[in-house]
Image 1 (cartoon, rainbow, N blue to C red):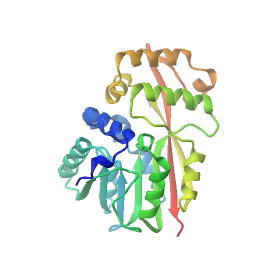
Image 2: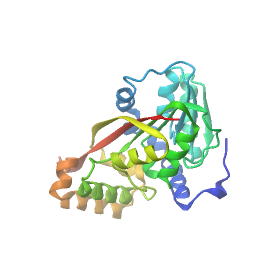
Image 3: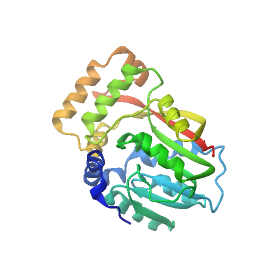
Image 4: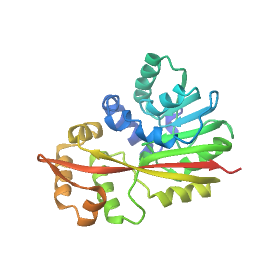
Length: 265
């Protein structure tokens, strides 16, 4: 279940360090346990029993569980052992048969054309090389297999909102690398032999600031900086992300990008 950690990049080690220290908060994290995004993404995609699926950066396994409940043969991987420990406990509690592996997203230890479906949900913004992640996902997919990416974003061209959110995330979590616009992910897909089929944008409210800070291991100094950023957000950032205050607490709305692409050859 392991990979040689000597090959990890500094960014990968930071991600591993962060999630090792904060794994318990993701076992009860409302952002991940709410499966609305998965249900909407797969609403018009038939998942057939026996299909082989790979869930990359599975964390505590919520996407892997979703796929396994539909009868897929699921392999779930992550770079952090403590996250996988939680996923294994959850799978055992449900009686779900899932294979768990420890390795990075940028170098997948599977032969070409191994899977019918590759998923990655709310994790790609931590990856050291996002283009390599897409290339590897495409490589291990069978022809006509599906690549499903769910991650935070802002609408194409809304640079002020992107800059605000990116800075907040880096203050909150030292392992954050960066979100990408929808058109950037589509470019990565096309370059890797994947044909984008559809994109969904699902907003959801970030109103639990304590969980947000706890799950990010955010220092008190950086918490104060984030509060100041909420106060000083530009009108454009406020418009896109609905940044504001409720009962003295900062709130804003995330935008989840749910992107589906098909392996062309």
